[in-house]
Image 1: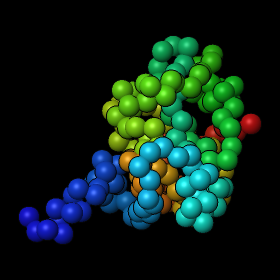
Image 2: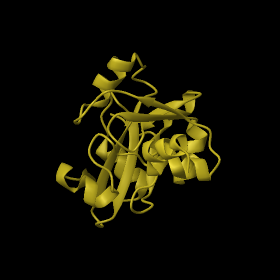
Image 3: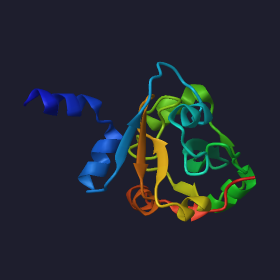
Image 4: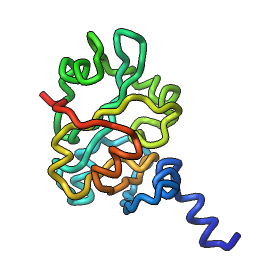
Length: 164
């Protein structure tokens, strides 16, 4: 394997490899960061819009099942709307300490693509307004930019109103 291919292999996250496997076009943004910083700080650093930059939130329902929600970085998840969207009585955010064991990703690098299991995923309906959306790339310091329809396809997600 050539040096460039080795370098690409090391750089690519599981999420990126899944997108490649599905022939989905995406671009990668990178930023300097060693530890978690929130999406707003990343968007400011990269001069990006808050509206089409989405954070990935993981919840657990009353049933004990996990659910993934994507909302714009400057917004708050409406837990009642989220629960209704997935047919649960209620949902609550999982503890930060549980993110890696549930998803396989660390805080700040959590993406809905390629989690340990294919959890039901719901994306805020505002994503449909944009040609592209920005999500975590699967590790701190990387983002994936892709079409909302492609993200819906690869995660088998649906669009719903999720924000307060």
